[in-house]
Structure formats: C-alpha cells, structure tokens
Length: 212
Image 1: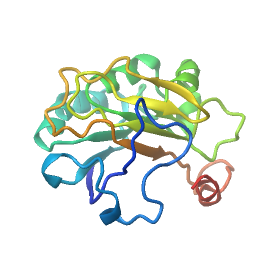
Image 2: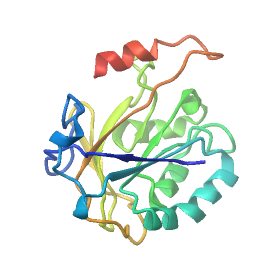
Image 3: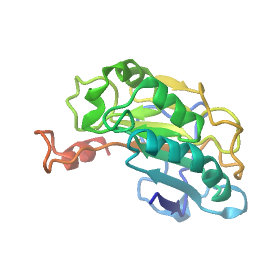
C-alpha cells in the first residue's frame, strides 16, 4: 500500500523558481521553528510515497487511483519508485511523462535504470527523475533533487537540478490539485540503492552522510 506521511512542519525560505544543489529549511529538524510554507489552517504538509510500480498493471492502478487520492487526501507532494514500470524492468521517457501527468512529482529509480537507456537524456536534464545517489559519480543523472511542490496550480512542479541546472514545468498534473495553497515548498528527494543480493555498489549510508 502507498505510505502516507504527514510532516509536522514544512521547510521555510523557499526561493522563487526552485532550490538547486543543497537541502533547505531547519537543519536541526525542529518542526516548531519552521512554520513558513505550511498550508492554510496549519495542517501538516502531506507527502505520498509509492513503490514499486511494476509494468502496465502498476501504471494502470496509479493512473486510475492517484488523481482522486491526491484530491481526497489533500496531498501536496507525491514521490514514486518506477524502475520496473517498463514491462517489469526499466523506464522509458513516455512512461515517465505519464506518471507526471497523473500527479507524480518526483520519480526515483534503482539498479534497473540501465535496462532502458533511452531514459538517460531525461535523467541528465529533468530534476523530477533521479537514479541512486551511491551509483558511480560518472553515471548519467543525479542521485538527489530539490523540487518545489505544485500546490493547487495546474502546471507541473518546478525544480532545480543539483549543480545549478533548472527544470520542471513541462507535463504537469492534469487539471491541477484540489489542495490547500501549499505550492512553492521545496522538497528534497534522495534515492539510495541497498547492497543485499545486488551487485557491488558504494555504501548507501556513507553516500547519504556525505550529501547531508
């Protein structure tokens, strides 16, 4: 089942047009000190995590259920793992765009990112899709991103690619979101690959510690 997590306080100090390259907000993690960016009425910022979307049956479920779920649960931001959405292994640019269109803000990938290399140009330029952070640095794309929540706007979420690149906008969420005005809140997303029953890879704990 999708995991719905309500964050007690959302990050403050959201710059216009997205945040690039580094996490923002309260480094101490104290919700009481970060009131800026909360939706009207003081309700928590609401995040939905979905994974693992597998093949056409998984995509069909997301496209059928997510728009209403986003509206009814007043979701501000949606992250989905979709490394197996293309016939059970990998992802294509078309499938990535379909996920954005039905309400996903950021797509995370794992080791199966290499199964469909047509996604590589998208990984390089679009901050709304990321591969594991603990992949070799030379690998295409980025292991983390910071993307602004779309709130109740009809367009796509804006984002800043690590290293200063800009992106977002294209695609968007069809019809907008029936949520409180929680747009413009920067959300950091990191993808990490484990090491059990997988080919050798850098330690995910060391990788995320260096980033944070």
